[in-house]
Image 1 (cartoon, helix red, strand yellow):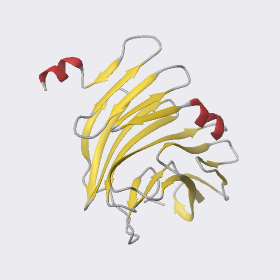
Image 2 (cartoon, one colour):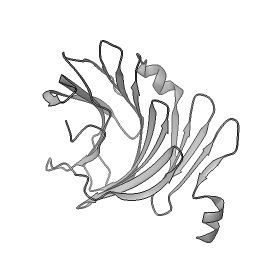
Image 3 (cartoon, helix red, strand yellow):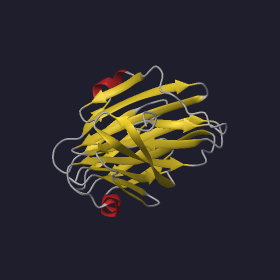
Length: 214
């Protein structure tokens, strides 16, 4: 369970799962943060944008061909087995009190599944973590995008997926949210972030002043 909860892992053709070792901080600006880790031939760069109960994740994964890429959502636990629903693009775990953990594939991921365990979580005997899977990494670098939600009430995964769009052009990802806000994230050699709210000024990292100095 610890290897799935909140963790982007790369599983090699030999079944060995990458481990987060030294975390390399890249950026932090408002709702946005980015970091990377390396484990042998694997390098994972992640940009995370938080908005209320939502976390939008942009991953740039460098790995050998035929690796599996797995993105874990948030673990839930309770006194009895949790309700689990998986479709091709959405994974859903729920408790009877309405607490819900959802993962949504926005780009690159092809399947969902759930890691369930007993006596593995301090918050309850039964625990479960939804996760996304990309079964066949092409080799080199590829981009994957997910939406991860932890909410105190019930969530409609299909409606959630329809409300957020992601388009990918090389290392640049453009996200569009239900209220019209646009977010752009670039990973790789020159990391950048820009958020264009419906009202108010854009937010950028690095700032224009800092970018001019580069």
